[in-house]
Length: 166
Image (cartoon, rainbow, N blue to C red; front, top):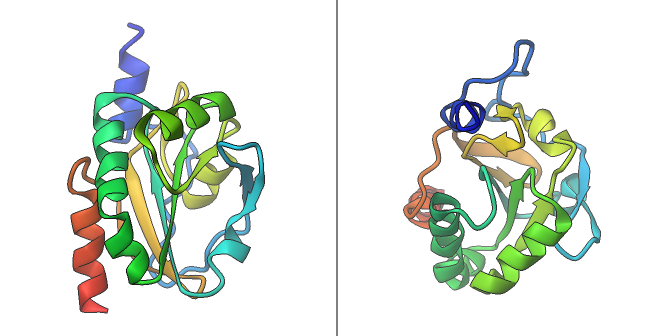
């Protein structure tokens, strides 16, 4: 029984009344959260100019989430050369995010969305402390691409494909 709730969240089953994911063309939600260093990050300010990738993952330091984060880490230079800022979000604690970032040398911001404010603002399904894996790419504060079933080890390649078309 203890595995049913996390599995449900990962495949997108969520509690009744959950918001729909934000649509392409929508403005970047005005929401803030603390990162792995305990510093407040205001997403709308961070993404006001240029590209901002906000990706959600179920749980820090688990196999699929590690593949997803390391995919972005390994392609970080290519992605940032295109002007993209990267932000990962899970419902983990600041401490868990910090340990995850340090263990895998992740060069980007990880938000500790313990209260699911960011997930809710994006309409990301979550249950029992696990958010569904999704990715959102903004340009100048407007959503230009979303992946509601984001890949693990292909996350960076998927984002690069989108950037090549822009």
